[in-house]
Length: 253
Image (cartoon, rainbow, N blue to C red; front, side):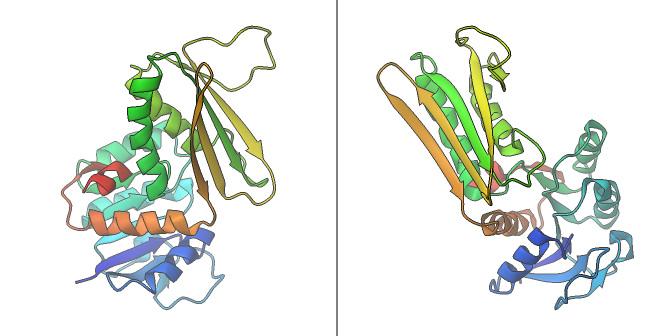
């Protein structure tokens, strides 16, 4: 039986990308959508708010706004439906609510839904355990389109966090070197942001040693990579017990 999905934020850019991908995937179907804006015609019923949705489903995929997350979590808990939470920019209070909700239903949250990025995080941990002790400096350069509001990207920070976890969180993040004139500290991770054109997402993690440099790179050529990851996560989350899951769980399943 296919995984039945409610697409929260169905008329947004990512909601439509996922709708298109699901149309060609027999293992999953969108049975309802939620969006306050009537911008497109969908093949499934669309409700203005999640509270109005009366269609049975296995999982909710969320690519909406942070302001809608509280109501989404309340609905998921009341219905016992798992949530693939893709919306970013959540407040500390909302993150606490995510943790509370995960005690009652399955919640999967990740800074980046790309399977490639999450595999990269896994590889970076192994590389860090070898290269950091050998004296390699670590720098991250991320590039995104000129409409992106935040910098550095949440993905760049997630990559840095995965590295720092191996280093007992002893390294500090350096976002700007223009304000002081000094040599680079040994225990720091430099994070630089580039904004221009229509770049979907480009991340380079650089390990710079004496006379050699090792670079891990990931490039997203379209938003479909995030949609594919969200669909994989929805399939994974179906029938899962309450808990807080990540894309690492999907990769390792």
